[in-house]
Image (tube, rainbow, N blue to C red; front, side, top):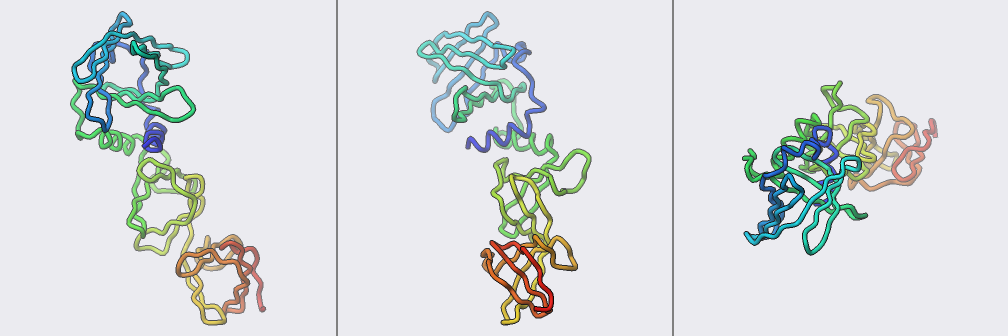
Length: 256
């Protein structure tokens, strides 16, 4: 779940408000979003007092916002916690605990009706709009999210991608219904590759993902039917031989 929070925050943070605008956040009931059965509520008071409630059982703590570091110090009576401001609007607040491991706290404003009802749906709807996300259906049945750059209407090499706001593993991903694959590296589209099929001199089917629609080039990717990486010297029936290492064409020989 932490990967989801991190991905979502990266996609929506440019629209975040700041706790500096305290009038938007004080004297309101902020309820912790969690899978637990307990209802945990915070009410920030203008004088620095903090009402903490768990299933209606309340205690009085305190809070302090530090503008320069954008951090919130909460005194929960029994302990203190330092939170980094990640995303804020009038409906939700997301903080990250100030520690090496990512631990996120998401609070919703009980007085604001969020449509759709689910916080996840609310965040997904927002990030799709803010980050100009387009969906590409893959052969696997998954949907690849592409963050289209503002000056473009179609996905291009260099665009960031995600799966449900989470990073995408490096590899090749086939678009459903097309002979087009996307090479993904560091959660970005590195190449667009066209799928072509050839026959080796020993009669085997060889699949190649090509940068060019018309010819095989150095750097193209060769794989078997099971999408296994190939390391071999492959002789094709068109009098070309390919030196392949870990699936990538290192050299092309002619007339061998």
